[in-house]
Amino acid sequence: MPTIPAADYGLIRGSSTLSIDFPNELQDPDVELIEQDIYFSTPYGESPSFQYLSIKNTKGDKCYVLSCKMHGWRYNVSRADASRQVFWVLRAAGVARVLAEGGVGAMNHLLNPRDIVLPHDYMDFSVRKDVGLEGQYLLVMRDAICPEMRKTLQKVCEQGWDQGRIFDRGVYVNTDGRHFESPAEINAYRIAGGDIVGQSICPEVYLAREIGACYAGMYIVVNYAEGVIAPWKHEELADIYYHESLHLANLMLTTLKNLPEEKACHCSQLRKETLLKEIYNKEERHGK
Ligand SMILES: [Zn+2]
Image 1: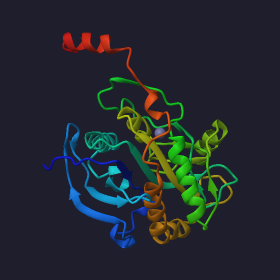
Image 2: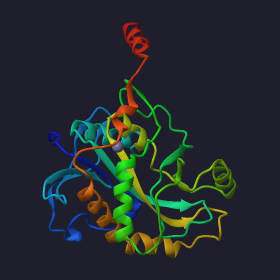
Image 3: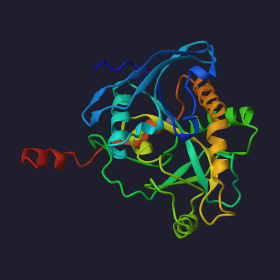
Image 4: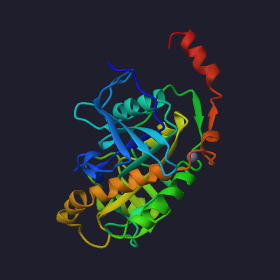
């Protein structure tokens, strides 16, 4: 197994950029694909396939990126294990910021397909529990999505996306999948305060905090959630996935190029030493 190279950023690609040959199809002279199809050994099983890229940022400096597709999900690997493998690798690489993307359903009646939402908060309705690494930290989920990264995403999307509107805040409701939600479930999530629904912000947002990295995501509305506005059309969903991927991948890379090199956010202060250490240590001594 190869050793894990040092990287500044983790780039977790989702359904919106699945249909393209990333990053080659973008033909971006500032992006170099150093290696692809790299698999790493982790305590949770062999990692998904990673790519290792360099990107020249707007200051002309090179940054290094480890990227995986579809959140690391594969057949025969639980989503919890896939996420743990991804974040174990990103931590070993020394990644300080994680950027993700994906398609979501609109629960808020004001949203339309092709709008981009940069959520500021989330609610986890998945039943996956205990999805962490070693659990040695107390994870404060205030400002779970990095305000500084969101600001850069907003600027880049406002300049580079004219297929829909940009919303710089919103609440992402995470469900388990793999099926979509029922109209009654969507109604409950909407009343609870959710704007968009999807399956991938959790556990990524917790794991990012656990490894001490900032996290932010760019989510494109691909359909109306069940019972909202009108029954959604499969053709429109496919059209967004097949025809907007290049554009969305470009927005992701442009965001990485524009992130300030020095962080000015407080994300890293929201990971504290656990107060339960004594309990864990005692359990270990008793062989539990
Ligand atoms: Zn941050």
